[in-house]
Length: 249
Image 1 (cartoon, rainbow, N blue to C red):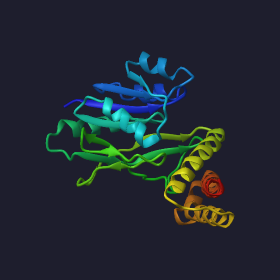
Image 2 (cartoon, rainbow, N blue to C red; image 1 turned 90 degrees about the vertical axis):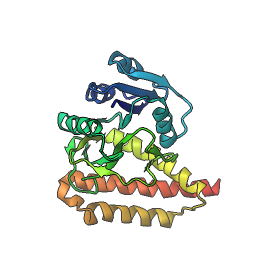
Image 3 (cartoon, one colour; image 1 turned 45 degrees about the vertical axis):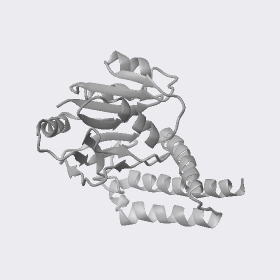
Image 4 (tube, rainbow, N blue to C red; image 1 turned 60 degrees about the vertical axis):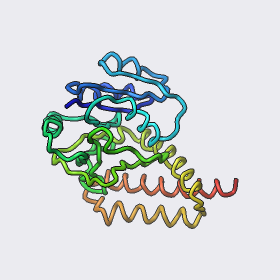
């Protein structure tokens, strides 16, 4: 059985090498670039990846489905450019694809870092993500952001080994991603006929903070748990303000 690793990327020169190098054992690595203006494409090709470019950004889900269509392996491993596979997870994946009786779809816990700190609470652990499947057994939803893996009729099995993830390396990245995701999230909600207001923005921001810091025990992650809860709350707050602005337009 062969394995194709699929990655979407745009301006990921700082992280793409670590991601691709961690799966150098795969039969094929496919990178679909969204129009990088840095050296992402050159770095990926230098590591042996097949790189295609599609600059008409349709959203995360649709772009990932484009990447899936480029893969030729019997199995698919979908990674984000800020993720990487350690040796323990690589061994577990190779074991799965070598087993003819293995489940068709697999999920795994994700070990995420917030500005350098591994988060063990705050809703970030174990954060199971579905990333490995037999080709044709799953696809992504077409959502602009927060896309989901769709595997109708198949319940994912679970690997006990974690996928590594550097969600944010700096507070600049936190602010940039919060801005982009709140914009896309507001657009999706507006398309579904939802409406925003200042009151809803305040309420949802407050509830997001409570959920992250209290209910999901973010306080156990120390000061970075507090900072994550605040940034999550801000993202929710701005999403509903932007939704309100969509309605006025």
